[in-house]
Length: 471
Image 1 (cartoon, rainbow, N blue to C red):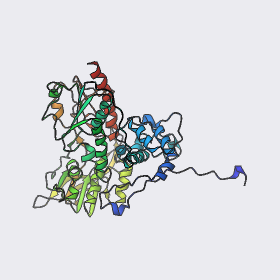
Image 2 (image 1 turned 60 degrees about the horizontal axis):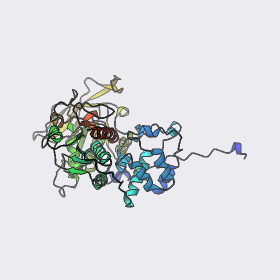
Image 3 (image 1 turned 60 degrees about the vertical axis):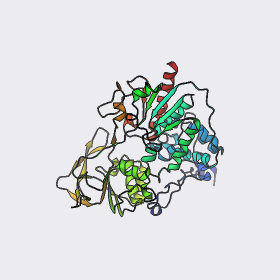
């Protein structure tokens, strides 16, 4: 056979991430994705063509040097790769697990035009875990103190990013967190099987070692107002990263019945308060044999997969559009299918029916069909008349989004919020309409991703540094 007739060598495919068996993991809270081995990581790193103009970097909200850290992996310099990522992100082990890389850096990967993109998120997770397991975390050298004090309200992704960036610039940083553990949505919202809480603690401990002070069980807007932080307490600037944790309900009859939860309460009980370990931990949860979760986003997937792990015989998604319109990550939807979750799409609840003891017993729904696209570009669901039917349930979880918590904004006189209660900021700097106050993350955008909140925190930290140094 001549050279011209030899078959072309098949390109190396994207390396599959090892997972727990679905029928095993649906009954435990251990992490679903096991992570790349060194061999898999090396193979995946070789798929990166090290292009001259890497489009993946501007595709990342915090602009990690993706090309650079993957090159270091290919050279087996795993710890150096982790250090390179940490120049831009303090949470690589978190982002490698929960960020939607498929819609960001991987979406614009050059090789994605002809084959599957490089698994950037999986490689990020690999080097972060490698660094942690080999005990080689190195603290950056800090500059002399500037004498400036920064207050951060909220220890979620945006607040932690601001704290890390500003402590590295020589400022004294204090983070005020309303809950008893730092991490925000990372500890109360995302389940253990997607993001082990030991990993969040590891990343927070890194900030503590840098000198960031954390004050827990401290509700800004109640214990101290923003005005008091700037005035009496003498902080030079304040960052608000308190998230959007106010749950939304549908406003249908029966939402006040026993057995009905907001996704916020349900996941907080399980994740932060460890209700899945009751009675070892003293927070109970109603487990339910037939659990219906209303919604189609990532939070809905987290809730329904949690219900399955708590022993539900039927764990159902009730969603008013088709699966194609679901805002949840495709990976999370696939995992839910593998674990036996029942999907009742094109279905909309109209009331929750209770028994004579005040407990939820059924969900009355309407069948839907898709009409013209709405403002989001998704086709609008239209009810089909006369299609009412009932679904037996004993637990209903409403996962249709959240809204802004108004407490902090109300404590900052002169700070503008929009009609939905979110703080108005300059997009490039995070500066609010109140002097010395900046904001970012879900309290500005509404519920979004971890990495977008971190990107907002990075912009705000840069602007805050410039502001306090000019004071």
